[in-house]
Image 1: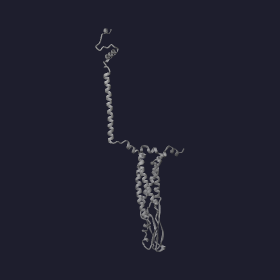
Image 2 (image 1 turned 90 degrees about the horizontal axis):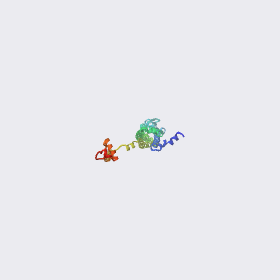
Image 3 (image 1 turned 30 degrees about the vertical axis):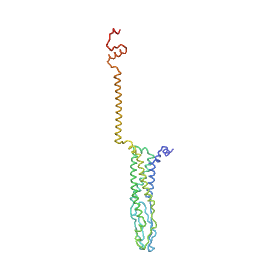
Image 4 (image 1 turned 90 degrees about the vertical axis):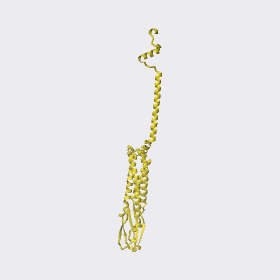
Length: 302
């Protein structure tokens, strides 16, 4: 039997079927989709400039841009329709901060969720030791939930700006040839943004997963059961103290009653002790020779 079979038999992989482990697996899968659809994006648009003098026209101007969307560094050459002269133009905008922030959070979330899954499976005892593992896991989960919300919102705004900056109609306005009515400028095709739209969707899905997992990690810390077991309200404490005093008082009363009965029994049921003489008198009385009226002579007894 190999190591994997032993782990399966021992129940180490049972955590995968539980909500905590299942959500961790979904987190690192969705994180892969998030940074892959954004970080691996490459788009292209195409425009055409048809000059009045056909020999000066350029009917296929291709403009490519990629992640991290530093569009101000993307340039292309366009005809001016004034002889053979061309002009070099740049796109507008730098949206690398929001894009890189989103991808960075996705990568680190993937690494942490993957590492947490490994710890759940192979190091469950170390994870629960001194409650340190669940506590750290809870804090990290809360932080990543917040970061997913912020990064997804920032990237959604950045993507909206990227769409505007790469709109072919907006790019045609940058060309001097298109400002002349004798020339015809057309948009051939726009960049495909479906992959970037998907990245935003996965970003908010990751936020939902991490935020939902907060509760399950919180249960691992044991704080919820501790809060239900130990704290008592002031009324409960007063009632508990009253019951304790009442029980003790009843016990004292019962003890006093038993003690009094014992003393009465000792008073009426036992003979007084007169020391050595008394002991002799009791012995004589038991033998029939004791006279309460007084001592008798030896002659009378004979």
